[in-house]
Length: 381
Image (cartoon, rainbow, N blue to C red; front, side, top):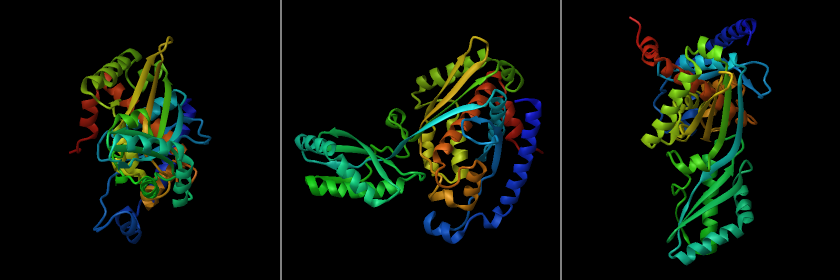
């Protein structure tokens, strides 16, 4: 990005900040429709818990078919987080932008059945394999926005665990998946005389860290990468490829292995939680979103390749909290509010996570983490 383009980006940033100020000026008393929120988002509603929201950017993301660089809304109470992601956005943009990709895996719901014997468990296993088309037809009848993609089955003696994968279009879709699974479970009970003990038997696995979500994925999986130019490493991130790589190796790889972590990364949860809260996602799904792996490699010319992999993003651009006024506006800032936008949203999240990883690892490699939090995370007196 040239200096001229950088100045243009700064002007656009000023314009969008003014628009955001105007849009969110009503946040004190009218940030959501109380009658709607109390009927579908929160029971026994007594008020609103507010979290400051900032923006990071501009962030250049290649291949999204958009004219302008993006700004990322982040809702957080952690001082220095927005500034950190903002610095990562700058480093990425000046290095030519982030490349992104995503794939819809499907929302999972996993019932557990009691069969009474290994023989009956085996019979249920093969019956499911032979009747997948019938199960798809039953699931489809529960919602025109839902499709059963596949079923994974594991038997454990008297018990059979199933993991249904559903395409729920642009909604995160857990409610649709649960309703469809209930219908499927009742059909299986009638046909085979087995008992569904729970429509959710933790083989889903929902809102808990688990290797099955890392390996087999859940919701969406997404990737983002960038080649950081050595001059950007020096001027923007105040480090170099060798120091960055050494911190990445010892922290994200060796340190994670030593601690038995399910996340081989620096701070996915920070960016995931801030974006989820800002855009009306279910905050509990930050658990799955915190998993993932960051990769770094020093190139022969001294530049640094960095990528992130997010195996389990449970997200939506319609339904649930995405329809609350402020959250819908936050999605709108990124151009992903409404139908047909969820794949783009997954890619933007991956690029934002990449920005956060780059900035934190650079800060650690130059020894400025404590100083940054002291300067930005403390009240100025």
